[in-house]
Every structure is written in structure tokens, then in C-alpha cells.
Amino acid sequence: MSQPRERMFVTEDGRNVALIFALVSSLFLLWGFLNGMIDVMDKHFQNELGLTKAQSAWVQFAHYLGYFLMAVPAGWLASKHGYKAGIVAGLLMVAIGGFWFLPATEVHFLVKEGKVGPNIAFAAFLLGVCTIAGGLTFLETVANPYTTVLGHPQFAATRINLAQSMNGFGWIFGPMVGSVYFYSKDAAGRNTGSETLYIPYVTSAIGVLVLALIFYLTKMPDIKTADEYHMDNGTPGAPHSIWSHPHFSLAVLAQFLYVAAQAGIFSFFINYMVEEPPSMPASWHAGMESFAAHAGILSDWLRGWLEPVDGGAACRITEKGAANLASVAFLFFLTGRFSGAAILRRFAAHRVLGTYGAMNVLATLLVFFKLGWFSVACLFLSYFFMSIMFPTIFALGIHGLGARAKKASSFIVMAIMGGALLPKLMGFIADLSNMSRGFIVPMFCFAFVAWYGFQWPRFSKAESLTAAPSVRGH
Image (cartoon, rainbow, N blue to C red; front, side, top):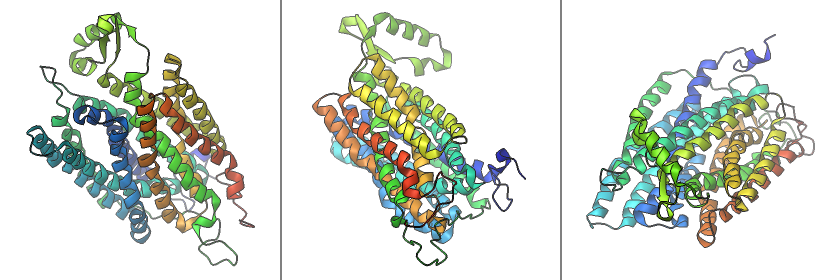
């Protein structure tokens, strides 16, 4: 008999799918990178177009609107034509969105010339954001459930968290690239971000086309999940609607609220780091600039993280510095993903989700209380505890749904629309009070996620993710 570690990427019929898993994991890296750039874009538009925090949250709205609109078509395509068709279609759509940023930049030049209003330029960029998100919807709808079947069912939650770790790598580099191209300055100190914003998107589009060709030429098995609720074989009395299973329907709501919390924290991270931390000694600014001057090729990247305040008596974090600190936060996120994948091999997925959700309720509450550097530390810890939530909710939600898992996946991905709506509420509260107070919104979201995790066995009639459920009374 195969050892557990060997069964990680070996299906129940004996096929080794480790190479396919690695290829699919590259998709997680891609959308992590693109999402990471989105998360540092809000402050750019606040500066360039004079938007409030609530208004800049239209970036997140456009991003997650793409998920909402394309989730069902993505699920339909995957169900009718298989995983490969969904992936290739998604990649081509991402490429179209990436290339669109080139004409969107030209529209912004028309704003500077006074030929069109700033709202037109903002809308042009939002269209590109929405198109890319639509393509990512196909990738997430297909890749998330596909990772759960690429090996033994016992390790479904572990595999999806491991693949999502690649997403964490992308999220680290996305803000770093965004800080260079969105908050760049010329020799005169003039902001040039609007003139260079298109560069990482067009470059990504070219790479995405190459990746689409690789997937098109690769043979990918179309593996189905186990039909543990007997939904597809006509068993008398078996519930045939995915919505009749509360472990799925509540997973949709849990994912809606989790992504709402995640999007709010990610998108307002820069605002928080610029506005909320206490001032630092002026010597820190001088020391940082001196270090940057001797950092060689990293000099431009390290310069400008801090700026003097109070007449030079102290310093604070700049927008560029905050964008780069977002990458540090995503290191916490990535660490949580890798450690979470290991933890999920030993402990029940629903208990891990419940525990991490409870820890984030505490972390965001302490940010809300505005406790100086302690609250800043709690913000970084929230990234760690968010790390396993999306993939684990996903795996718990599609558990045992058989061939209906693809359709179920499309609704769970559609729930990402939460990221379009609640960040506007978080921004509204921040505009009325301060950024710390806005964290009351994700706190309530995490409370529901924790409750879902702890109550999952009651909803699924299964003891754990791999335990066969009893459909009696379900």
C-alpha cells in the first residue's frame, strides 16, 4: 500500500498527477500577483483623482464584479467541456484585460490635457480590472476544485492549501511591483504612476498567452470528486440540489464574508500604515535614506519609505513604504499557507478554520481599539490567520458533491462578490472616523467564518473532511 505522503498526488485509480498539480499551481501564482497589484491601487487613485476612501473602493467593486458576472459561465464551461477548456478561456480573458491597460493609460493622458474628465479615465482603468477579474474567475472556478481531486481524497484540503501557497508568493511580489509602477516619481519629484501603471499589466498579458499555449498542449485528466451524498445516481430520497446541503449553502455565505474581510484589509492596508502607526524618530528616516544610497540596484526601491513630519522632528511611513510593507504582510500570509497545509494533514480542517477565524476576530478587535504599534502587529497577524480560510472554506463547501462540485464551485467563487460590497462600508466608516475603526467590519465577518468552521460537522453530517457522511435527515 502507498504511504500517505506518496498518495498526496496519486489518484485512487493509481495515476500520478504531481506534474499536473504543479502546472495548475502556477495559476495560483498568477492570480496572486494580479490581485496583489489591485490591493495597492486604491491609494494611487485617491492621490491622482482626489477620491475618498469609499470612492476608491470602486476598484475592489470592479474587481469582484468580474467574479460575480463570470462565475456561473465559468462553472458551465468547466462542466460541459472539462477543466482544460475553463483554464484556457480564463487565461485568454486575463490577457485581453492586461492589454486593455495600454489604451486606458492613453485616456488618462487626455485627462491631463483637459479633453476628458477624470471619471472617464477611472472608468477605463476599472474596465481593465473587471475584465482581468472575469478571466481569473474561470481560473479559480476550475483550479480550486481541480486541486482537491489531483490525488487521494484524504489530502484534499492539504492540496488546495498547498496550491494556494503559490497564490501567497504572487501576493508578495504584486505589491512590490505596484509600489514601483503606481507610486513612481521623476527626478523633479513629480508622480508618474499613471504613466507607468500599464507596464506590469501588459507584461503579464504576454506571459499569460504563453501559459495558455502550454495548457492547450497539455493532456489533463478530467477527474470527478466522490458522490458521497448520492446526488447523481438516482438513489431514492437522496437530495439532488446542492442548495439542500447546508454545508455547501453556508460555505457560500462564509466565503462571501471572508472575501469581504480580506478585500477590506488588503485594500486599506496602505491607508492604515500611512495614517495610524505612531510617529518614529527622525533618525530612522536619515538612516533609511543612507542605507538606500549604498544599496546598489535596490537603491531606488528602498528610497522614500519614510518621510519627515513635525518640522523634521519625527518621521512616518510613506505610501511607497506602505506598499512595500504590504509585501511583508503577505510573507505572514504565505507562512500561514505553508504551515496551514502541514497543520491540515494532522488536524480536522473545520476545527482549523474555526480556530483561525476566532483568532482573527481577536486580531481585528485589537486593531479597532487603536493600541499603537501593538495594533499594527495585530494587523500583520491577521494576514497569517486569513491564510487558510479561502481554500479551506472551498474544500469544506464542495465536500461530497460528486459531479455537482464544478457547479458548486462556481457559486462559491461568485461569493467573492463580498469583496466588492463590504470594503465600501469599511471605507465609509473610515471616512467618518478613522481607519482603525473601519476594522469593525472584518471583525464581524471573521466571527461568522469561525462559527461555520466549528459547526461544519453538524451541517455536513460528517466527522471530518474525509469522513463519509450519512445522508439520513440531511
